[in-house]
Image 1 (tube, one colour):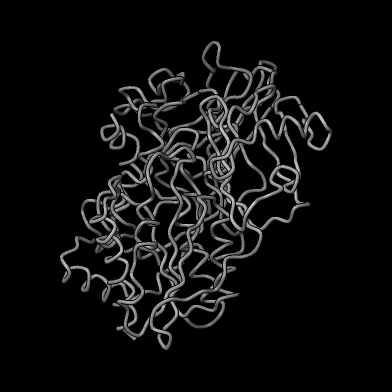
Image 2: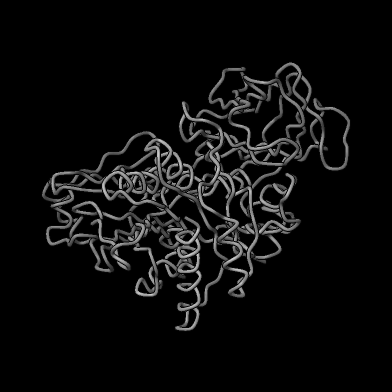
Length: 478
């Protein structure tokens, strides 16, 4: 099921981003989010708990062409029975073929039976990932007031196709806030859950904390607040973790949904290993994802398995990042400012081949999955800019031609890529390049590594050697 669904749900976005000159025919990052979708979709690629309104059942759109209709002006679509209230995600599967140079393309609004607006989402040109590609544009509806319909308003001059409207209960509720970072004992953590839903698992470095949290609630040292839709549990870090070390891995679970965060007492130390007179490299990899991921992340394996003593003219600082949109990027920019590397090479878990990323994008979006994929603390992003004031793209600063030659000479398979996805990898690449550019010197870029779940001793040596070759080729390219 995994690989067939990956083709159905992801190829339209990840695989279709290969139309630019010089790209490989088969995109190396296809299947980037495969671990989110295994076993959760039906034969047509819809979530198992979704209610679907196909384009063929929508009368206000244009003529049916295949499975899609062209939207015209304002189109109101009645929601299916028993999918109108509570916590819902409503996704319109759309394709933008043409739009004006700036401004709105389509506005999606949920409305009551008396035509009152409940929630609205707008897709603008700056938030569009690509033209002529299908993706899910979600809107969240969290209200006991029933939404009778969804209204899609198409801007003048825009050409937008609709394949289907999909409605399903929001599956991702558990959030750890504010996320991974530096915490004093007085700082507070908040666990956000659906109304009345309990935490079923809470551990720190594998040690159960539920009894500790219950005792703190009974003593009034932790609080539980219930709003119309959410239950919020708040506790001071020092009360929950009085004996924590320098780095604590916090994990939570509730009714099939998991979240994790990394709590540090101090920033990661600026420790470089290798040739002490050589160029300084910051190497980053990622923790496992999703939050309940059962296998290691190949990028962390590669970074931690590299042998610094085998480097010539280079020394490395290694940093394993949390899989969180803003927090991972913030750790990278902080390490650049404090530790002053000459080059940043970030590694991530990719798809079917090793991929040298040419370009990063000012966009956070996992619209290839209905409802979006959460980061490890439970946050989702859909058609959201990383920085409203930043440029739309940032090109790699790494000598990727030299890296490609060195990897091929070593017998490794590798491709170039212009699409790192719009998940955490892209955020880290965009932030690292931007920070090095702001500093006025140095290099930064990203390499996706082939997806794998098998890590015996030989595999670890191989991935560590691949990382070493990338570093050495960059150092030798000076």
